[in-house]
Length: 298
Image (cartoon, rainbow, N blue to C red; front, side, top):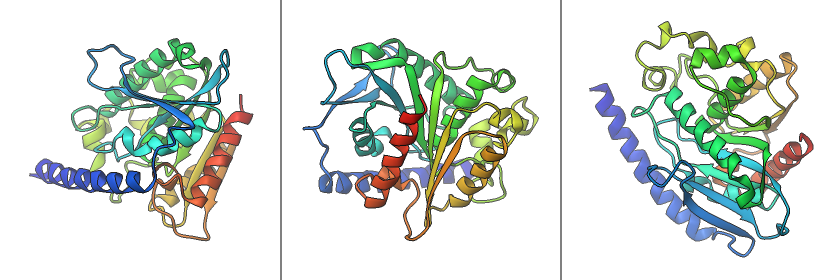
């Protein structure tokens, strides 16, 4: 009964998202004159069900190699789609990145670890073929909003800490991750709140409390935060997970991770505003700082 209720709510939210996207895209056309978009590139082979959108700035020189920015969309693990982030990806491409936005399988059909495995394989394939898109496969940055930020965090933790990788049972990404941009991150998934009350079993599995990975579900675990790359976090008044970002930024500073926090507190802005509403003046401000932070950490 509970799973049926969740499925019903997801379908309603998917309809709401589609309506919003249609209206938003009509009001904010894609900047085709500035950015080339290649849709649904199958980096894992043509038999793959899911593709990746690629965004290349038209100002790129013939033999230039720009850094890679992987953008992982949000949606609470249960919904969401890469198309919601297209304007954000186009904006970041104009800031000097070749941006790759992969679709990924969702819960409960796939669990947290299977999603991480899929993203790892996709990112490895992207880096191998980076030169074909004017990108440098050795300059890799990860960016994500909400659940996407959570995924980026753990992709980085698996890369930097063998202990976390072994507990997850996942091989790390091949390339070094130069930096992270985490927008409205859904960092805490087991608190007694609207997320933690229902999500863990759907995402980590029914026996999640007995798993080898259980200690590392806490993002403040020293093994998770140890040796993370430079990280910029973005939130705002109005973001219902603002307290997550503020709390986690303190944990990163305590762990001596190079950290920058953008917390816009003079105006209410929605959750994941930088990814979903990149045309907003406050999003532009935050995204410009994000591009600067990442570019300076190479």
